[in-house]
Each structure stands twice: as structure tokens, then as C-alpha cells.
Amino acid sequence: MLIRRLVALAVCAALLPAQAQGLPDLGDASDAVLSDKQERTIGNRVMREVRIDPAFVDDPDIADYVKSLGNRLLGAADPPRRPIEFFVVQDDAVNAFALIGGHIGMHTGLILLTRNESELAGVMAHEIAHILQRHQSRLYQGQGKYQLASLAALALAILASRGSSSQSSQVTEAAMVGASAIMMQGQLDYTREHERESDRVGLTLLERAGYDPRGMVSFFERMQRANRLNEFKSAPSYLRTHPLTVERIADMQGRVEAMAPRLVPDSFEYRLARAKLRAASGSANDQVAWFRAQLADRTVVRPREDVYGLALALRRTRDFADAEKELATIRGGEGHPAFEWLAAQLQADQGRPDAAIATCREALKAHPRHRGLVHGLAQLLLDAGRNAEAIALLEEKARATPEDARLHELLSRAFAATGKRLAQHRAQAEAYYRRGNLAAAVDQLELATKIRDADYYEQSIAEARLRELRSQLAIERDAEKALKLS
Ligand SMILES: [Zn+2]
Image: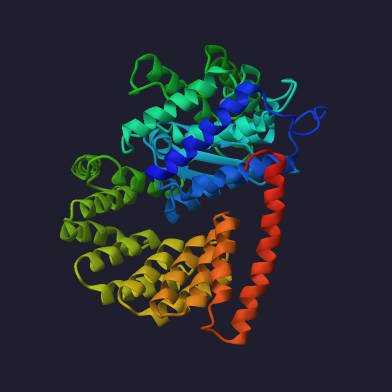
């Protein structure tokens, strides 16, 4: 991962001098803003880096929850809507950002700082508004010429500069220098006008989607207060990129007062996602203590998410027996597929892989589309050497949800274990393709078509797919060349 960051930095460094010298004209200067296609090309280029970053959260429970929250808000926007990809970044720093081309990233630190779902939805709605109002590309308006390469460098720098304690401080420091050099040119920060507009549009989305608009105000207010009192280790970059002023908060309060007040209970998925993130952060022992304290004064009704969080934290301390005991109290009744997956993991932890597999299979009957269970079961089958079962499961699920890259990765592993090399590379190609890395997908298919271990039918499928992806790659490369991204 160190290498990954250095690559990102190298890209920035290589682009910075070009920026200083003045970049060539990129497109027609009479265009008011970047075209949709140009934005998408830059966004895709950046997302290729993001998706393979170890900090990119692939956990289906967290990723799917944030995606559904984002899509619910986006669905409240006036058509025509632009598709937006929502993702989560493992980082304690409080931040959320919209990348050009329709991608929104939320840091785990921000999700944990929210006190209720309407607050999280509020930040998300604000970011969605930046994209809907095309603020990123408008920042580049009126500069005489577009600086698209620097825009891509900037996006990479934002990612590289995520100051997280878990990363090498040296690399982070270097990234910060790169990022702040760009920031000093004043190209990153949204203007106050942009902020006002995003607050206004965001509040509307929030209300239409059925959340409590007061959530947006309370979250921003609390961030401002915490920052004033120096409660953050360092000023969150969120506040630097989204200038938060007294006027902004007063404006939001005024708008919210005109709306009907409503009490919106948090969804169970929000509560589960937060418990899972908390259980995975910081020291395991601290989290065990935290969840125990939460539950100590809740003897009558113990919130299921806190019991789940406690079981997760106990698993981290390798106290499997206690984790199982806690988990058992919430598995019956309503239950939840995430509880069943944790139960299976605890069985596997204690050397009972067959029981773990049986638990997953049983839970999948009720929740056939729960990705955590599907991925988990496939993993368990592979670990147990039950490759044929794994392949059958993964092929069935990949037919239903071909966009799930993880299924193809696991399939590739299963084929490798059974010595089916053509199929292995084909599956790996699909995995790369679903993660937006066309060049790597083409490489894998080139390997696949050179292997003669399958029948004519499979050969020709691989060849046809190779031709298809090669032509897509050519289009992508042309677009990137036009934008001086390659
Ligand atoms: Zn903003």
C-alpha cells in the first residue's frame, strides 16, 4: 500500500511542474464547464486508484448501507439525475468529499461522529448537492484554460493526504505537502456561494427523502463548536474544503425552521454499521469496555447493535467464548444475516469450519442476497478445500449480481485451486473490469486466451470478451489522452 501511495504522489509531482508552466489548452475554451464525458473520464481515472487502496472499505455491510443511503437521497433529486457512486474510506479523520465525475467518499471517522442517521444523511446530501450543481467543474470556470490534469492530481492528492494514524507518517507528510501546495493555489476550496447552494439543495433532498432536516444543521454546528474548542487532533480537512461560517449555520437554521419538524428514528442498518465501525476501530480492549458501559445501564432492553458491537470487539480480543455467549442473545427472533455471519466466523475461529459452513448455508436460505454471507461462505468453502461447492455457489451468485467484483475474485481463486487456468484468468479479468481497471482486465484475458486447458467453447468466449474489452480500453485511452491524464 505504501507503493500505491507513492505512485499517487508521483502522479501529483509529475503534474505539478506542468501546472506551473501552464498547461496546454484542453478542450474548447468557450465551454462553460467540463462536459459530462470529460468529468467521467477524470473521475474514472481517480476511482481506479481509490478502489485498490487498502483504505477503500469493501465490507459489504458498510458499503451497501452507505450506497443505499446515498441512493435514497439522490432519488429525491429532480430528474435528470446523474448517477453517483458512494464509497467509504477507512480513516479516523473527519471528512467527506465529492470527486469530479460523480463519486462521493465518506470517512469512517465522519460516520462515527454522527449522532443519528439524519446527521449522516445531511452531510451526504450536502456532498450530493455539490455534484448535482457541478461545483467541481465550475471551480475551473473563468481561468482562461482548463487545468484538467491538475484536477486529477488534486483528487489524488486529497486521497493521499488522508492523514490517518495507521499510515506511515512519512508518506502522509509528503502527501500533505503535495496537497497543500495545490490548496494554496486556492483551487480546492468550494466558494461560500457553492456552500450556500449545497446547503439549500441538500436540505431539500434531506426533507424529500424523509430525513430530519435538523440533522444537517446539528452536525455542522457540532463540528464548528468542536473545532473552536480544539477537540479535533487537527482541524478536519472537511472544514477547510467546505468553509463553515456563522452565516451559513444561521441560513440553514432559518430554512429548517420553515420546515415541518419531524422525528425520524435511525434505521437498524445505520445502527449496525456504526457499531461495526466502532468495534473495528482503536484498541479492541477499549471497545469492549465501551460497549459494556453502553449495555450496563440498559438491563431491560439491550440494544441489539451494542450487543453485536460487543461480540465483534470480543472477537478482536480472541475471547471467542464470551463473544458467542453475547451473540447468542440476539440471534433468535428477528435476527439479522450479519449476526449469522459473525456466528459462523466464531465457529471457524474455534476450529469448527463445517459448523461455520452449515450456519452460513442455513442463513442464506432466509437472506440469499446478503453479500457478507455469500462472500463469507465462499471463503470458508475455499479454506476447507471444498472448491467445487465454492464454484457452484459463486457462479450462481455471479449470474445474479455480475457487478460484484469480489465474487469474481473468489471465483478466480477457486479455479486456481482446481488448476483451471483459463477460467482463473477470465474470472480475474471480470474482477478487474468490475473495479474499473480495464487495462488489467485485458492483460488477464490475453493470458487466458493463450492457455489451452479448456474446450473450444470457453476459448471463444474468452476471445470475444477480449475483443470487447480491448475496444473499450481504446476508447478510454483516447479520452484520457485528450485530457492529458495518461
Ligand atoms: Zn460543501
